[in-house]
Amino acid sequence: MDTAVGLVQAYLRVNGYFTVAEYPVLDATGLAGPRTITDLDILAVRLHRAPGASGTVDAPLDPALGAGGGADMIVGEVKEGRPHPNPAMRDPAVLEAAFTRFGCCAPEDAARLVAELLETGRTVAPEGHTIRTVVFGNPTSPPGAGAPWHTVPFARVLRYLEDHLSAHWGILGRTQIKDDTLALLALREKADRAATGASRQGTDR
Image (tube, rainbow, N blue to C red; front, side):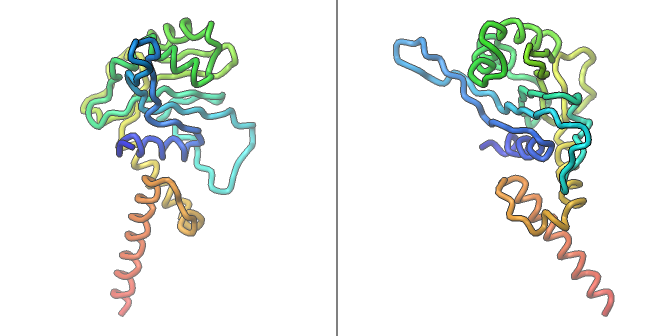
């Protein structure tokens, strides 16, 4: 998996989203048989949380994600440089295929929802969940007004994950973390804490 995509996936999972990374979109109409024409960097769904529900290591939903209180689906693009959607993210046929295959809406609703998503960056499916375009990257200037997508900088993604690990280290430090990106950040947190502890012991002497 692409490193940047892995980072975004870890961030979304910590925020309570179920994710699918590098989601392939196939063309099955060619004479040579099915072929992958593109992939979508990340698709993510967060279910509506009941009022008052909480877990031991829950972190607040990061406001930088721009999510509301209900069920939320993100169609995400990941860029190591300036955040902007690839052509695939602006292609109605690609998005309609992904929507239908991913099961976020009925096939007869896909074209209308995609058209609204491309125009405004968000839409609400008849089933009640919001579908949004979110682009992750390294902006060098503020996002342009009226851009039909939401932007989350990588600096925010990293800071949120680091703060989450630090705040809940009493539990997470004893946990075997399976996500490769989160495990690497946890290893750095452990190393920093070990170095700080050793430095303090040296000072005490």
